[in-house]
Image (cartoon, rainbow, N blue to C red; front, side, top):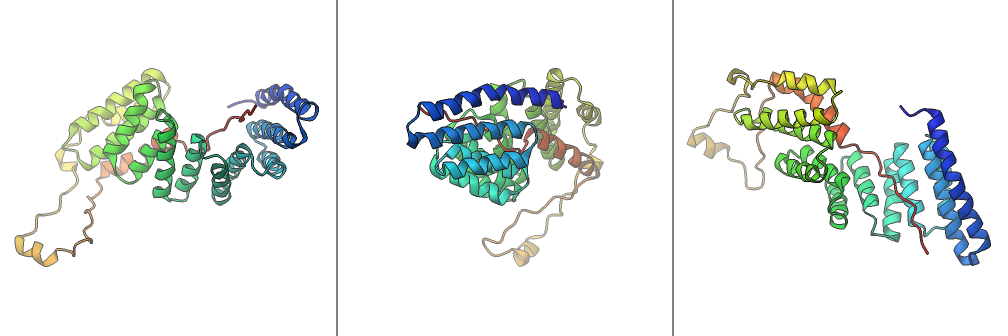
Length: 296
């Protein structure tokens, strides 16, 4: 945990830059450009207060910045991040949309907007924003992790695995990503225990995660728990195949077909809470911090 003294030190490091911006704004800029410089200065104050955990003061700074310069995209995105941190997804979405309207070329803000939609359960809208972020920045690990999270919620495990593997190709030391990938392999395995390669893939990812970060007791417990495959007696029961006549009588109308859920095994119930924790840890849904947009 970061100490208060460390946070205070980080706040102090911003002060010289704040003073320089303020002096520049009032001594060297034309009147029409002072609002932007003052807004940038206040935005830096927001960053300092946010790191100190003073969210009310951070919000006040952002609101003042947007009043001084309503066309400052950076100030609106920061205001959205504060609302997000305070649990107000609706206001966060409105602020992010305003920021994007002013400057659409902001991949982190699209990620933040998608994350806010995700918190509301609006998976389609979230996925749309994450894909926009990827189109702008194809190597963004955060956007790909969020896409993987959406796919896992939609039970599109192959697609989720592909996204996480793409992240690991660029950052193989990302132990949280490996834990998430292992969790998805295991969820998939519990639905299809006859495919033992899924379990083995999960074990491999957990082992590599421990090589990067050895102190993970939960992961060690998972490795011990799943060192052996499920015995066939614990496999989920498959529905009996109906006769041809029964199929004809019970066939739903076109467009009404739904995939039949497989019964949950005891082993599945044992693993499910752990995998959810792993996914949430690696696919964290906090707002992405923006950087000050320096303009000439």
